[in-house]
Image (cartoon, rainbow, N blue to C red; front, side, top):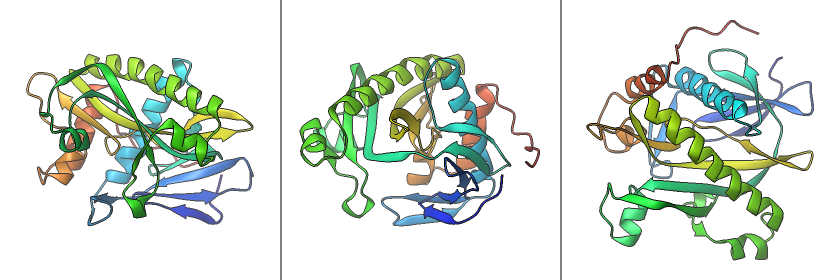
Length: 242
């Protein structure tokens, strides 16, 4: 499967068409950005690590019955995925208070949230991905009511699966975001699940092992991503070219 035309280029990934109208190639670049693109760097091996990490998580979710767009790895930095009609809404679950919720609500970082919180954000970089609610989604036609309910249900299912998976590697799944799209009318999990889009802490020390290492200048960003993968049993061996 070969890349044809670049369809989209985001902060850390590029999307290409293929000869199959229903399939795309997701290319994970070494680009790393934070604060709506105000801080950008190139980190060696990051594209490969995130591509492999995402494939591992998507396969684990598929084994647990979660329908995703992921098809297979093509190379170290490329994956084949289904072409979705993406819903412009991010679904965020927070198991522990961290990041923007602490600033918005004035709460202390590290508070366990029981039950976990759920938030919607509009996927709009120019406006800083503003927080929205279900009424906004329905009023502006960003998603059908049945699709909103499905997205919420799937996000919480993913939470149950991945919290246990990361606990097996002695890690806490603090929070994460998911994006969804439609494939022939079915809601599927799309985009990616990597340490770029979630927070992961060591259970014992609460050391940050995710993109906060880049945001907060803690260093060893890619090394921490690799550590997370190894704790889950992921080996970063080269992918045979397709």
